[in-house]
Image (cartoon, rainbow, N blue to C red):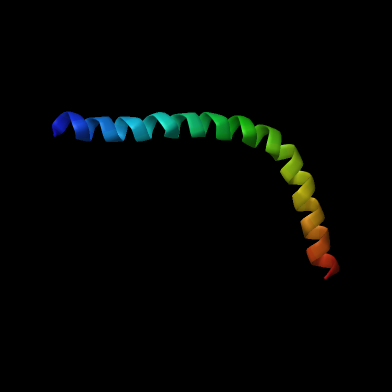
Amino acid sequence: MEPNQERVPESITVPDVTTTKDGQSDDVDDSHQKNASESVAVKDARAS
């Protein structure tokens, strides 16, 4: 049972690391797009 429990967290950690790496890479690219989208959203909110 011990090896089974150790395998569970390891499996979760593997995808977590991948997600973080992918998220960071996406975040950098999304930063520019998000900034523009946020600017529009702010303008829209102010217009309202």
